[in-house]
Image 1 (cartoon, helix red, strand yellow):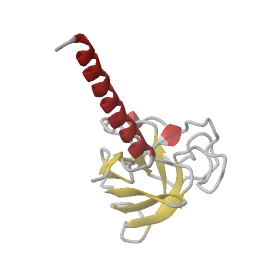
Image 2 (cartoon, rainbow, N blue to C red):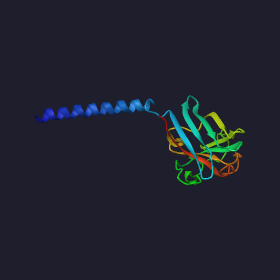
Image 3 (cartoon, rainbow, N blue to C red):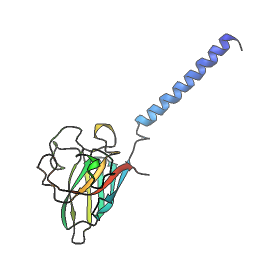
Length: 182
C-alpha cells in the first residue's frame, strides 16, 4: 500500500471512531443510559430483627422513595441515607454519618437546608410493619447528591428533626446499600 493511501485509510478510521464516540456521548447525554431505579435491601444489625426493602425511582419532580420494613417496635424511627455503603460492622456504624455533601445542618425532609440524607421518620404500626412512599427533591442518582453506593439506616428511636448532627435517633437497627436496580 502506498503512503498516501495508508494515510487516507488512517484518516477515515479516525473519523469513524470519532463519529461513534460522539454518537455515544449524545446517547448518554440524552439520558438513555441514565440510572432510573435503585434498591437497598436492609439487613438487621446485631440484636435487631428489622429488615426490609427501600426502592428509589426517578420521577418528574425528584426521586420517589418507597420503603417496606418489618421487625420494628411500634412508632416512629429515624430513617436516613448515610455516607458509606458499608454495612460490615455489627452495629451499622461502618456506614458513617448522615450523607451531607452540602454541609447543611440536620433537619426535616421538607427543609431546603438539610442533610441530603435526612429522610425523616418511618412509622411502624402495632405489628412492627412500616411503609413509606414519598418524593424527595434533594437526592439524585448523579452528581454530588447521588445516593448510589450509599447506605440506608433505620434507627431505634424517633428522629427529633433538630438535634445536631443526628436527630438523636439512637442505635442503628438495619443497614442496606443502595445499588442500581435491574
